[in-house]
Image (cartoon, rainbow, N blue to C red; front, side, top):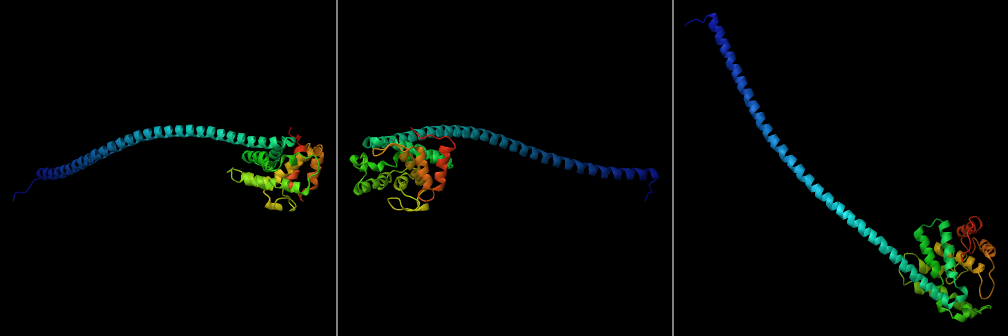
Length: 280
């Protein structure tokens, strides 16, 4: 075998290195092509994702427009409901006032009593922290608390002298009669119970059931004080008005016995500290 000289050995070594380098280059090209193919796939996926995002964005735009439309419709409906509710409340109050005036037509000597009682009761309830809705309930209760008097003969209502026991028992029946009428009306406030209980007293001496203390609802306790104050201060067929000072003295004497202490205190505060005047 022929021996290779130095130059031939170097050429052989260089050739071997070139073969190895070429294989490495081929491998790298294969990897690049593989990576390029992966990038093509990834780019297609990215394009697809972007198309999906654009599609979703378009759907969100449509959904947002629909939501805006729905909100506008809801706001419109809410405004219509507010108007309708106001009209219903006005109709309710007009009906209540009609009933009140019918009662006054039978008892002209105490005309205005129910309205004045209502205004005093509202003022007391506001002093006690009732919100506007509960104050409105007190107004309605005041307007209707004596509706049961329609069941009492007019000659008894307007009698200038002292009532007989029988006549007084008929008068006391107005609380039950008022309840019987109002219990069939679905008020958002306890109007029937106020009419039923406004002559009850904390110590059980009232009528018609002789309720005591917390058995009497707070609305009725408020109306009881307002009723006494108005009745004593105003003129009646059987006596001249006694004035607001005597009326306030009366409820003060009965505070904690016949009348609720907090209600009496609130009433005194209104007249003596806040300059409240008896309604006309």
